[in-house]
Length: 323
Image 1 (cartoon, rainbow, N blue to C red):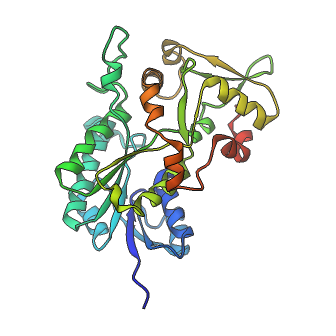
Image 2: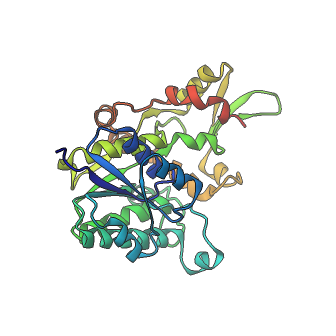
Image 3: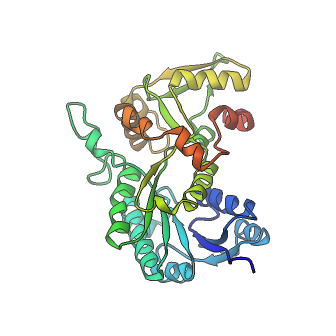
């Protein structure tokens, strides 16, 4: 008799990170894990597609600890991710900040994981930027209270919630998504017809990754229970602004220039969440050595042999990035 598969409960299974893991588990039909897809709306088209592909689909909401506890019951492990940018009703926006929401949801997940006796949890997290951005003479402005990059800092603060509950956790530190190039950060065609990428990253390298590779790498982490208690920092590539422009040029067959912006210029640009994104890039620049250095591509590829480089990702998506 074959051994029963271990159930992995995937929070946000219809989203970008959780969706990548959901697809990876389903694609690994002969692997040791079975997918339990957690989603707020089990009747959504995306949830139905997962069910049709063989997933167990369960309704659960990170704001409802009891629903998460029930969804974790009987599982071996769970992948937990919160969405700082999720649309929220006006009443919820008035009641709490997005950072507070993330920490409350992480706390609910941590307590549910402890109560369910999960053996391996992966928490999708990021660094705390304040030790870099609030020291020295060139300090970045505070946002949402005492944060510099709230969607980084709140996740970093939430790390301790899993530790405090005694949950066997791997802390999976993600990074800049290649998909950001599809959402306003890709090449822009100017009035003179030329293309340029304008980002506030000076000549520092940035670590990037395809969102699907977060899920595929998480599956690799689940295969290595010795990574419980460890921090695993991931990326698919490291590139300076000039290198990004060269890669876009090659993928598009048309010259793309790199135009570095200052942090203040980006703040004044009117771009989505410009203040927070400017601070994020300030962190990428000021912490480049450690942020990039912690993301060892060979180590990530050992967990995820299908890890996509940016040129590989651009081969599929370059045309969609041009504005």
